[in-house]
Image 1 (tube, rainbow, N blue to C red):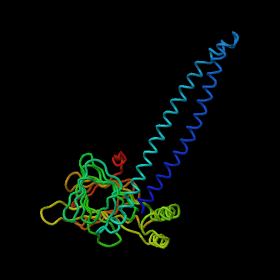
Image 2 (tube, rainbow, N blue to C red):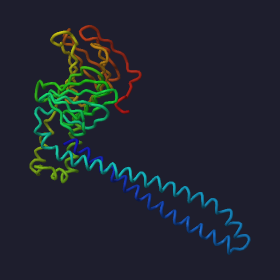
Image 3 (cartoon, rainbow, N blue to C red):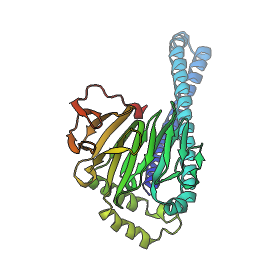
Image 4 (cartoon, rainbow, N blue to C red):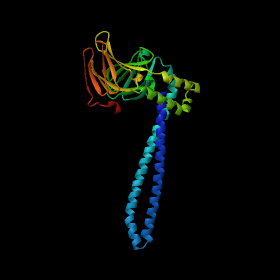
Length: 336
């Protein structure tokens, strides 16, 4: 439902911008009419006026013409902005239709683990069921336990996880596996290669936001199949107890059975949110950069845990060493 709420919120903002631009277009249109009227008076003065009036008209004409040119340029830009916003609104409405169509599939998906929010570039999704390869990654595609996400050099995927409380962005040249949940209240992912950006919202803020969404878009929820008043009230109650944990596994690459280390973030059970990046480009060397909150890293190979604080990055050689240092220059590839 978070994906639906976010679409509604985005559409509301776009509609508000369209109203503002319509107001600016009307104001600018009046300005253009006034300048045209002024130019007409200037033209009459140049023809019918006395010498002083003709001289003043000649002096005023270039200023009025420049003002008219500027106003017309502004009008063109405003109309282009409006056209772009209306196109964005149409895209959102198409996504709404798609989301409604997929709603039953999403809720009935085997072992659902999340939803693809955005997808760009060359991305492959390998489904556990029948080893089906999805060459086309699309928005609002449900993902399930056992699915594998593979991105090429231009690929990137944004996943909604933890019931909408968290986002995972899988970067280019990456391989992420949706792992089996150890318990019902967690989401589990394995980073085999590449880099992922994880952001988990603060629990209190997330619950407050969802409740506000429900109240604001209650009538919209009813347009989705089976969303009755009773179901909406049930959702409100579920929010109060829907606290989940995120677990990122980092397996040591060896011959035979993999030996996994884990990066659990329990930020969803604390007042603070968590935002961090995991990068794995060279076998067993992992880098974890904590932007907000803190991340507990457990190396099961040597049975030792470390707490990585906010503003620090840890360079980890699984099963061997860990080096922590302050973050000096973090590449925000997920924002590009």
